[in-house]
Image (cartoon, rainbow, N blue to C red; front, side, top):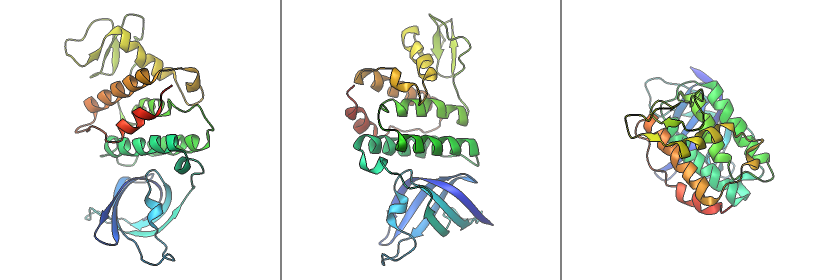
Length: 242
């Protein structure tokens, strides 16, 4: 079956001398893995730079249900980024998000709203001139809406606990340890009120921002099986000091 789709590169691994195994999130079929031959000639249609993390691609391939690794038919960059590859802060965010999505979307089938959210978010980051230090916090929290565990804010009131397992606020302390006491539970409500347009109004110290990252990743580990520690986190945490 021929598939024409927009795709986002998540991860690429060198295989042998001239091949890559590439994991992508596609708009039409969710997660798909490809084995790609890189021609030695610079005139070749497939180029290594196509497979940088979160590159937006238009691709065509013949999907074979009995094969774990698909083979590309045609590929091109759909929309080149103008600032992300050249801005150390944006690049660090994008590398972190690519690693995060590699695990958060591991079993995703077709989910066009999810894909559209990620694509729109990355284009926004590429175009924004400044004040994006909280981008990854907003991105991760709102992504949960598309993969099934968006926090329920119904009982978000002063003094409430946040039950991380159930994704809901509660006035009674949960009987299990996976919960946030009221002081930190209020952070969840704060994060959910943030969006890309207003996040610059929420000032955070480096320590506060890093604690938010830890809480969000903890939340994901409870809801996504085998969600690991992220190698790119340390670099991201060291960049934003204010």
